[in-house]
Length: 585
Image (cartoon, rainbow, N blue to C red; front, side, top):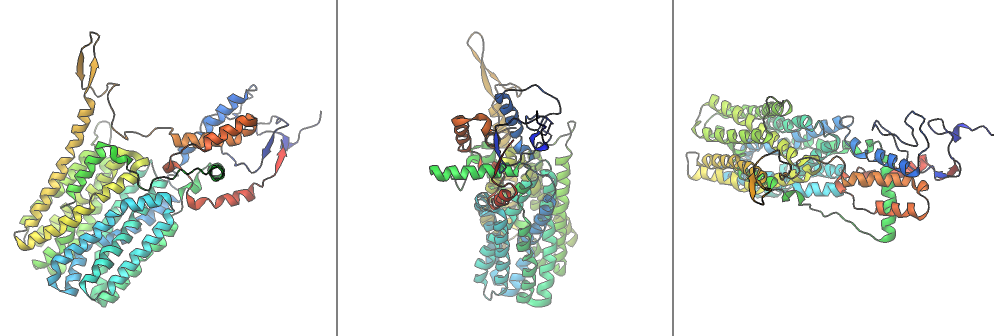
């Protein structure tokens, strides 16, 4: 008997079977600690020979764990997180510091443009929120990195064109539309990229992202006031443009998380095979641009209604606090009010995140009630602002109280949405949540300013506080919906029916998106296709080919596809690392 060489031995030391050819171009499938044995990798124990079906089942079970490693939970994700924080500080901070920029607009173009300036700021913020579903849908089909770079370029151009404005109506396109579109794109792209890297730590990393908006209010207010006072309108805004143009560079650091997937080569090979079969059979399975499936949930619809009603007035102090202080003679102290407001936003985000992250079985506060409490306190603080008059310390107290609960509201709203729809549906749902606030802001903020000017006695703040309080109470409809679902009927042995309201009853209906399945269709399809590719030689004949065609042509969930469009080029490198020559093993 001839001695076997190292190449003729398998990884567990047993001789390989001869007569089976395997291509070296097939991807290397990494065997991580899934706890499942594999015929090819071995389990460290000399097992008896098993059938082909048993080997196929073992490899299928192992390959079905592809989705478990989709979120790196760190690594390059920390770099992406830092970039996302700076995007919110620079881009979103440019919009949220509209209160101070409102004063600079009035100094440049005259106080007779007070009502129009209110429309300008609301328009810019509304446009940034309105395009959120479009941005998210575009990123799902194309590259998030390219979209983020394009958004940073639009943001910088919008600020640059604003610096050359000589008439007020020119600001509506340059600041109202162009800058709003750019900020909306960069902000949503940063949220999507962070979502690719983090799932288990999502609540933790969102602290830094939401806090970035508060830091942006404080820092960008100082930058805009200092630059315009020192250099004037045109040169000052051009310096601000130089700072905002950093968002263009930050977008280049958005590396797709699929590059770190442990089964990346296997998935790339599957996608290439699927593309070849689609080209041969002319099968098109295009994903719709807008996906409204999450709106089928009544909980999501109630949440959209609540945020929409609250948006009529919750942002009013962000627009008019500095102007109100300037009118009442506080002068240079208005800049400090903006700084306090931004810092309070950050503190509120940290405080509410602590309540979310450190919930225990003994003391647990539902995220819905945290969100309700925050928005309710915002409404009460706006109502109390109507009695603040000319006292600097009272303004400071209002800035801190309102800022803390406003920052807590934005964080708790985001995390409550994440809890309700989970990671898989969060991006699309969050786009609709932001879009629901666009039209109310465009209408509510200028209307509040108009009521303050025409009716006096700060009547606009009464309108704003009423809308915010009604929006907070609207969230109680979610509890009513939950109780309605819990009510169901059972049939007794005698044929009569009785009402059951037990929450532990197995026949009780469940809310939509309550939890994510462990193995969904997308992951099953991906794992089964990989197993069919690797074990195709063992299946033999037409059986293996038919199985491969059926698996690859099945409709997988597009949002669970781990390899993005921009990573396809890696397949060419794989071909060079694994040349297409076969050998006998």
